[in-house]
Amino acid sequence: MSAFKEFKKGLWAESPTFAMLIGMCPAMISSTAVSNAVGMGLAATFVLVFSNLFISALRNMIPDKIRIPCFIVVIATFVTIVDLSMAAYLPDLHRILGVFVPLIVVNCIILARAEAFAYKNGVVDSIADGLGMGLGFTLAVIILAIIREPIATGKILYAKDFGFEGIKLIPAKFAAALVDKPVGGFMTLGFVLASINGITSRSKKAKQASAACAAKEV
Amino acid sequence: MKELFIILLSTILVNNYMLARIMGTCPFIGVSNQFDTAMGMAAAVIFVMSLAAAVTWMVQYYLLVPLGLGFLQTVSFILVIAALVQLIEMIILKMSPTLYRALGIYLPLITTNCAVLGVAVINVREGYNFIQAVISGTGGGIGFSLVLIAMAALREKLNTAPIAKSFQGFPLALIITAQMAMAFLGFSGFNLEKLFGL
Image (tube, rainbow over all chains, first blue to last red; front, side, top):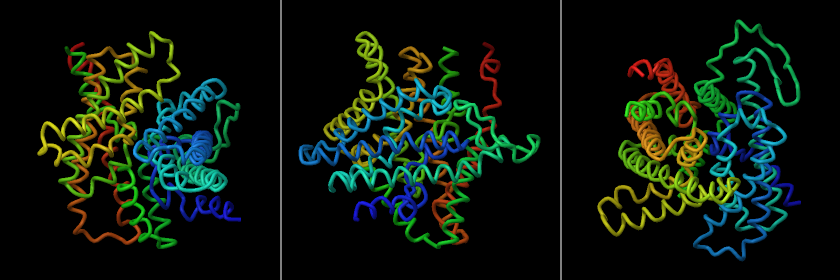
């Protein structure tokens, strides 16, 4: 039952993007369209689950002093698997995400979960934690994408790889291409975070987490 | 020579790693609280990014390409960067304890800065030669530092400003970053080739 608890906490209460405020670069890059968000989210989830699994299984063999390089090698292996598979099967998504696919390796979420959870806990709990955190990240990016995609292009659910043309929500002449650019990413995340703070008044928790984000990277 | 200058200028302003490519948001928001720490981080980022660009270029073209190991790019680049940061830390500690006190604590943070791995991967994708890669790395570092220091100066002023409770901290920092990004969009209208008569 504890595995389910580990799974559930990542979805919202300790959501990496909205509550812990880490892994923001990939969140903003991939939230330009819902299909990109799903692609990036699932890629990160895959890496997170398998890196948590292997690091947890090997945790007694990894020497404490060189644990970070060991984590990075494990993570980079799965990132390479994702990178090559995505290039083969989803070429358009791979082109849009571009350099951000190899950059999953420095996504703070994955290293943070390896360091804070998988290195200290059992295999089953670690898989549940990875799955929860990964899906929490996916959910957060999809929420951002649902806001950004219609404003930027007037359509939603456009996915070239699967031949979806997208559903028209607003006329193309009212679309603001600026939201597609980094400006829109920062702005949307800023306002979404402020709304969440306002609704649940979790600002105190977020402040603690932001300090943890800065300290964690050491 | 003009070409190198264009690469430098475009990585600093037009393709700024932080504002145009969105790389390194975590250290950017995390370290821009205080002006002094931002200065230290800025110096460390310039230093590591230019060195990392040089070393990863050599790894790519003297090791991975001749041996046909292109698929190991991600693994080898991140390991080289992690080792490089560790090495720089030890060398600085030995050579100049004063500099170490100024930069030391920022160096480990840099391994997880995606801009450093980003510049290495982008250099290979753009097909830069060695000099161009180093210039692009240095320019990337300078661009990141420029934005980081500007942001730190802005946020110091914000400490005394009355801000709505839900916007305090991260949300407002992100919205200010968005406005800076909007200002930097102006640079993308520059035609650098034309400006320097190429």
